[in-house]
Length: 282
Ligand code: R5P
Image (cartoon, rainbow, N blue to C red; front, side, top):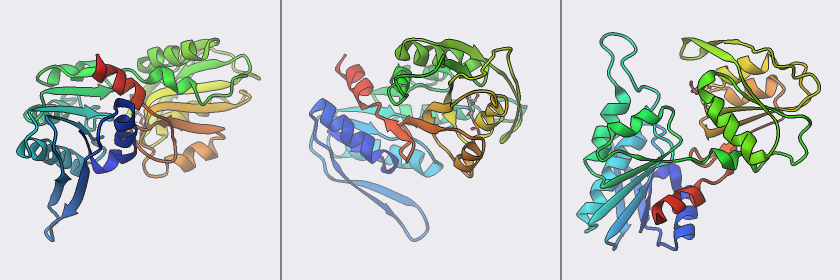
């Protein structure tokens, strides 16, 4: 039976359809003091597949509750699917005194899960924070699907070196094009400096590919160096698009911003449900 976190209801339904599993009814409530109560009102299965993107601190807590509720209701196996793993970018103590938040949340989730799957984590190493090690589902190839078939001499560009493999995967799925990357230096949470490469984008279509678009700072800074390009598309696995990210990207002249349904919203153009279902079947 599929059990959905409140932020992943559409993806959970798509996964239920893919797998031919029932979708449990979940009530998402809150006590007057603000504490959450996520409860299963109909659940009867030996295996619970809990699908919950941890897009907020509340979503993390809700996931822990759902894992516990599934066990409480008789599930013998709990499989947790983290389409988007929140706190995944805090995968190290970057300054003295900081926590390794990704490890802390992974440990908490592991206490209630027999198996954990996550989609394109920011750093693959976070898998090892889970016990047992989390399995990674790669959904990047699907990002080629919403692109126009006829791109003009396309460049698949990563805004930093870390996203180059992702850009390559999207290029491979599209079929043709050059892959390149810029260099990024982060000054603060929402302030980044981008150094362009020597790629000539004049008159060409550019697809800028990243794992996450959060504040949109990385993308909008990168796009400032693409004024000679014909069209600019932004593709990401996790379209968090917080604060004024959409405004920033629209003002930068982006043709389309799209991502997957790991983070559900208007930019969720492709579903990761088939990729998750394939992994669960294996
Ligand atoms: C970080 O290296 C990630 O790959 C993304 O580039 C980053 O999370 C995007 O964040 P923002 O949209 O806030 O610049």
